Image (cartoon, rainbow over all chains, first blue to last red; front, top):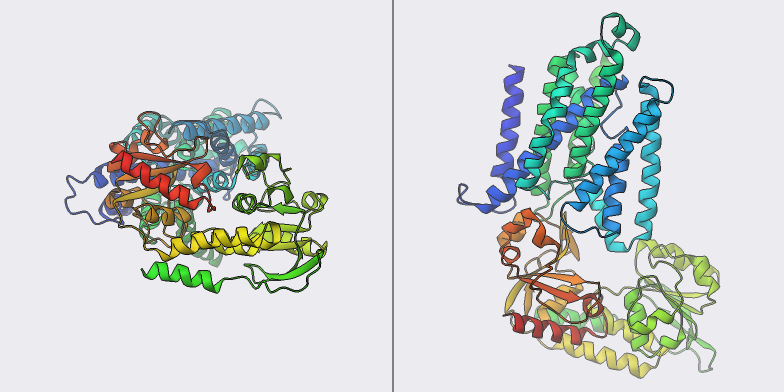
Length: 311
Length: 300
């Protein structure tokens, strides 16, 4: 019942995204607006939102911290720095910015990973968190330095990109993501059983037979690769990766075999729905979708918190 | 017609309160700036710092270029401006660097980011004028205000009269419909509140987003596709001074797959305007209008 409701919600969000838009469409089957803009944008939104939801759920369990979201570990800082460098240095071509963002995210990930290994041969989740925050803050400082030296229009454009959006959606982008995301998704879904054990603590998980060290590395790398792709495709979209996993836990419980796919579907549905609102509410203008996910997500999150604290 | 009337009215209403308050050479006069502040300005000003590219260009046009002792990094026009020392950025100005040039008048662009600097300069005893210089109607008004201070009243009046007559004559009927693309991802277009929309109208082109009150806005691509402009117009700051229709090396939207839904992008109907002439409201507006009109006629 819950599953069919969630799948129904995801399908409804996708249909609404294709159906609704700022311009009236009469012939849906032959409209280039529907086929070249709305459909790839809805699919890209679903892939990005799903990736963020899944990455968020996995990372929260990995670092055993309910505050963790895909961007807490320094990836947004690295991606933003890459993007701003691409804009400030006028790197040409439509792929320069996403590739630079992707490269920046991977660089941040490598740096944080290296830091978290500093204490020994195993990833330390606490150092992972602190290292992520430190690397993110440093990248943020460099980003701000570059932006403050750039001229006014470049500065604004850089910030607009950082706030996230799906306006660059195209079939090419959808295709690239479709080829890219299955591997990290499968790796994360396969780690569901080990993550169940890991949330009990590393020592108990080890006694119960989990290969803790390998699981931590795999989950961290796969979740980061998903986040890096999401940020390259759509900029930094907040709150999806934070709220969706908590929502999933409230409805599906803490078992990862259900939580992870539920976060994937719900993340996709949330982002597609938020993007439809972003395109519609101030039409013909458009809001950055990250603002809508925050406006919709945060009140919901507050309700959820109240319910928890009521027990 | 109503628009023309409005522009004319706002020109008349915004005449500066430049009543004389003394006759000596080192006198000062009281000027009301666009922030509504009444400022005692040395008359004439001999050491001027300009913190906006459009104001720097205007001071040169008024014949006051030799009195400029400071400009921003972005003040590149006219070419002679390159000889003026740079004092930093126009928004969030560096007050210390400005004061070090020992100016007796500082011209600031109207923005919440410059108000604190204006206050600090006033405390240092330096006259600071906050000026709005975004639209066609601002050029003549500001020229009349600054003319007596930095050049001659005659220069200010002659520029003012040119813009009065532009405002008074009805624009030609629109021959073509254009979209001004300021950025490709996310798509940012210029709206009806922009100077270039006014230039386009005078040049016989209608901005398809003239209904947006803002100077620029992020819009959805499908709206651009649905409004179906004949030309995609971009401003190019990388040099050159003629309006051109490129036949290769098209502007960025051309390479983006999602932009192909816009007919003018598909058909590679791009019009590139040189930033030197079109980049900001300036006394050269009549030349910009003529260049745009010629460019559109040649392209048709």
